[in-house]
Image (cartoon, rainbow, N blue to C red; front, side, top):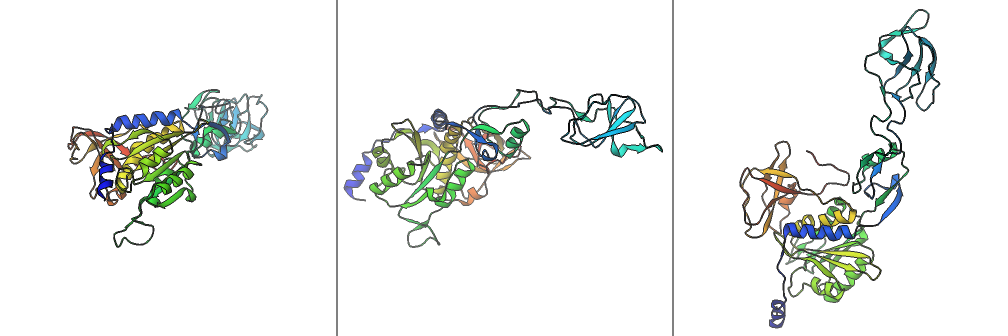
Length: 420
């Protein structure tokens, strides 16, 4: 580094870092304020979206009494004379005479006047063809409204739409849903020192974030196309400005890797200044990963887009994802702020002074314990590959064995639910 460059870098005014919890709350709030607009979509196109309004049922569920077994719908005492058959999808006539029965299929509408349903496997036939048997004392049909009453709210706005939600909406009589689409994300990889294939060699390292970060973003519910991943971008200011401007043309969120400090080839800050961005968070008091940032750009038409600056060290970049990008995306989806589960530390975890420490852990969900893993340096990914999340060690504390601590889980595939 030249004397002039070093002097210029030393003169950059770096603001004090935001507290980790404060930073998460701040980015969630700006994400929610910029939540993506609600649109109507056919049910088949809503997987991965988010409910923009509560899901209510249009009718009672079930809408009419339905048989829960194959058997005989009877009236009065037996043996019963067979007078017909009721299949699913039909609208049967009332059963008006005592001593009569109709054969009924599972899911079929129970005729008016039926007093019991006799299971087919518990029935017999008399010599003259009548049905005999003893119905169970508990009704063998589902009553209208047993699952839900017409107009009842089943799921709140902000619920992620997955196959279970789609099926529930269909059963309620919905053909379309009001949803928020998944945010569109892009990734810019910075660093002339990066290789995109083969093993590290001759002072150059393999880019681990270009292939990995889009997969993390998809697990947070983003749309990321292969064309949205660009890099390595040349280590010049014009190249950075051009790449970021192009990515922002279509993306709601652009993540960048590296360049978040103020070194001689760290061009992210001047790029954000050139594009008129405002910082939401500029460094966070967390280890690893403190030089993370989130900036916001607002177009003249009011469209809001975000840039998440992830540190270049791989584990630090993932810390930035779980710390800033996850709550931001929750807001853009219109979902609630993620609530962190807690676990009991199985082993000690050191504190980081006045910074929050995010420590990689493996969870034993049956025991409710968190076990620190090895190989957790900022530039390492081995520990991350065997971990379930990060234990949160608050500033000024240490993680003692037996302590209950929050855990930031690593994201699951869309639609997956974590084990209890």
